[in-house]
Length: 127
Image (cartoon, rainbow, N blue to C red; front, side):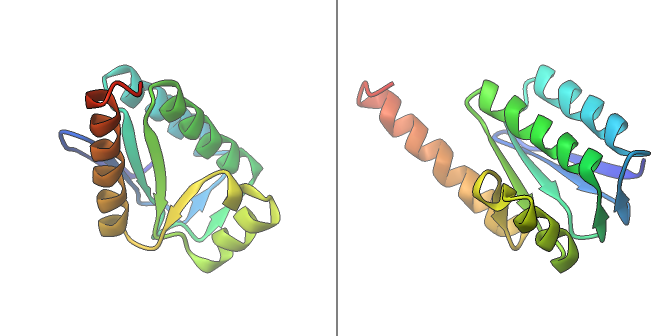
């Protein structure tokens, strides 16, 4: 599986450098998600801009990442989802479950906003 990880203070970006997210790649991706969240990542941006095909095991891996992010009160954002993959996400009704944004830049901004909101709630004793 070809990918790169860019770890920042408030988030990590995992850029998948594969055209297919299928049964050959999904198990490796799931274990990479687990490792990232165990090592302290709370917010993850999954850059899907090079992925042109996803099967059910690929969607399952993405849902694992979404659950892991939720478990640590974090945020998963899929960025750069290609039209074919978006169609599958929509058909699967996962567009209502997943955070989808057109670009990594917008995903970074959404995570920063989410973190500021979290800090404000904590300061005001709302959490």
